[in-house]
Length: 465
Ligand SMILES: [Mn+2]
Image (tube, rainbow, N blue to C red; front, side):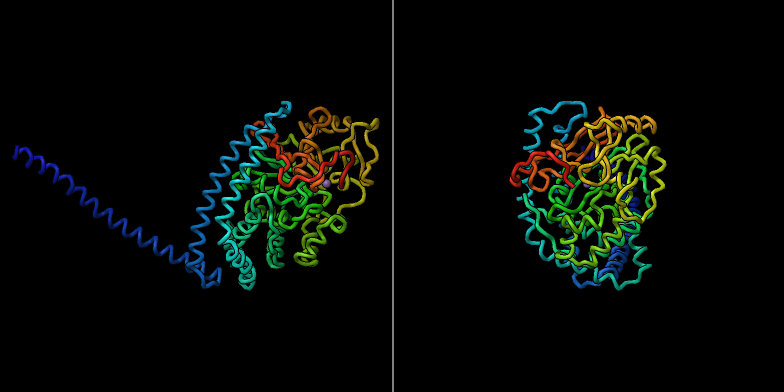
């Protein structure tokens, strides 16, 4: 027995020796890696110090840890919600049924509960962090521009922090108004402008993606869209314009979309609506909001950005998207590439119609008057002919509030998507989002009006600018 044990031991002992040698090598390697890691960390810290001249480094580290944790929680939460909404999304041809209502209502109540819980936890950190965020831009403005460009080529920390700040506006079923500094606004608009001005007037985008219609300052609902369908870069989005006016938080809507554009330029695309226009903003609220919350100078800057927004988007050569609709002056999609920017929206002609026109099923002619007193209406014939001549499957536009959040026209050749549910607090319309999947398979996602925020009912009987 003893011998056996000994011999066993010898054998056993020999092996670990080899392993020990390897182990030593491994340890050396590990040590080297450890040292390298430390060096990298130190370099990183040094870099951070230069980037943000802030003495609260430790605080920042804690913050980052919290951020990661929050993001993980958020991801889990979003996953749950997505699973929920998948059951409520329908293929284009399917009829509505009562089950959908039930599913969607469930999402609303669930998310409200979760949000309250989450928000309570976040509340305490929030004030400090907002203050910090507010300082970021000003601190960095003095820095050398070239160095800044280099640092921001991939991920822009300032924008990340602004996105975080903007996301936090939602508290349960209400959305607080954030304090937005002129410096922040200028910074975002400048960065976005650099990217957007390089885009074509007609964007070319590939599937899969989500297409959203009018948002009109309904920031709470915009956040719901991203929470349910995931933020870029996890999902790709095309917005069809009308981000501002009417609603109370146009600034938050626009700035969040622009921040996402800066950070993930190939995962979010922003077209121009008729409300991305100085003249309209002065009537429908965005000018006043900018003047009250930031400055007239900031409004001017945003107006310049509006003038360079792309007008149309072509998805995989088969779906043409714009805010308004077709025009007498449009016969070939190639014309859409030739629209020159920057430009204001003219009172008539191609660009005017692309952001202003509406389909009409009571037209006997191809084009008719528009009760908005701008642009025209176009008939189902116009849609059929245009799609046929240009080899298109579908025209996707926004611009009109529609009861279900989506509405077909000309058979299935044109779809209207309107994403702001419970529009202006006066309608009880759903919000719609069109998902275009691989192989151009389309689905509609529906945002029900939030029950707690539901305003008085108003029938949709006329066009609302
Ligand atoms: Mn519109």
